[in-house]
Length: 307
Image (cartoon, rainbow, N blue to C red; front, side, top):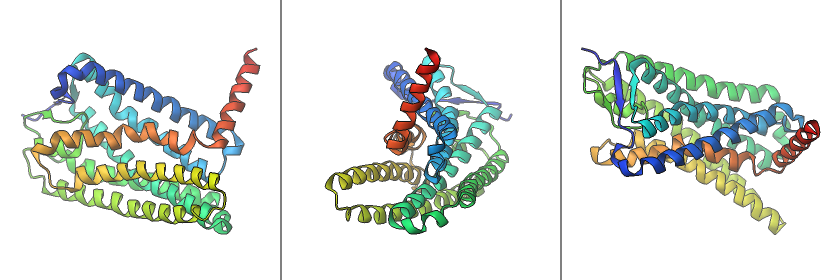
């Protein structure tokens, strides 16, 4: 008999920490949602933020609002109530949304790094290199390639047979633990997953890393010590978070699978499922002077309207 629902084991091995984990993830989820939705609203309503950089940041915030909402609420329900079952269709939907959004983010982050490279290293070419049409094409390409890859992988997963057991040793419906539960041939799915992970992580990471190397080398030539330190701090923060995002994905999906490393992979998964939606708004947007000014203006308008 085919499986109709799965049991997500989540962080069952950390039973004594469930309350702490729940409140930690709740705080992170609220921070991520508030920060990302705030950025989406500001980018939409403030014409001063209608630039290529904030266009991409708006796309990233929209993506990460959906991204964290796809995983964390269900995970928190399991921590709070021990209601850890998910239907087959619900698991398939979560699997598809995760694949779609994580693949899109891989390319979108590299597009954003290229945008910053042009702005800082090639300022004279920026206006022509980042016209509105080109920005829309770059963002749309990221979303479309992510969608196509997720659809292909989902169609292959749906061809697998799941006849028991039905316990997913993870906190969401991910490729690796699902493949382990299948009682049919998974070679094609595993190969496709490996190829997609390679294509969606290594080339974008190399592009991002190279862009930031050029950016940092340009920043180091800034005459002002204060300006150099501030710009270097910002870019190094970007590079650290991006490196953790790509690095964790490559470790979890490209390295050989081991039962002993399952708990380690579960923790590493937090670096590309929970951390980016929380950290990216803070390091990419909310520290920027333009965004701070936009928040102040919005606050003043709200207060004047209220009183």
